[in-house]
Length: 224
Image (cartoon, rainbow, N blue to C red; front, side, top):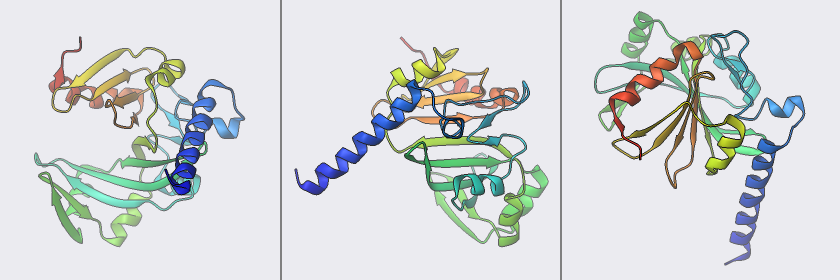
């Protein structure tokens, strides 16, 4: 192994140890806000994560907090469903690099108009990705965040999630790809574990948890 590769893996292992340690030891309040287990509920129906309150905070606030500019996109699924997303390609939280996707709450009629004004369309897997017009991209930055997806750059072990979140209320395995979802409806949290794949954490207000659950129930496979 070359010196460069040894250095790379040394840094990667150190990042894992620092991040894992932050799960098991208390930190300063400013640091705790950067951890994916530090979920707050200002009201029973709202979720606050990474300094953002889902349902009221905006992309403008997220960009200030993450110190990163988001890339806006619209997506149209094969069944015609439209969603608006803002993508953060590289965010550093608690010394760990990650990717973050936030979905934006856009009224249906306004979202359709944005789609029709889209500048570029690309297709992958039957879905269409649309680049919004500049004015629409600016508008997306002003609208509330409806959900947040956190994708850490390292694979986290199940024990870490059990330590911080406890046992999930429900586990569902996707029939198509075998990914297992750990569901915490009281926190509006869905943790996706995919074997050797990196974990994905999705946050919604508890009142919207059914929107995460129903698609999973339609495509679940029995767990042993």
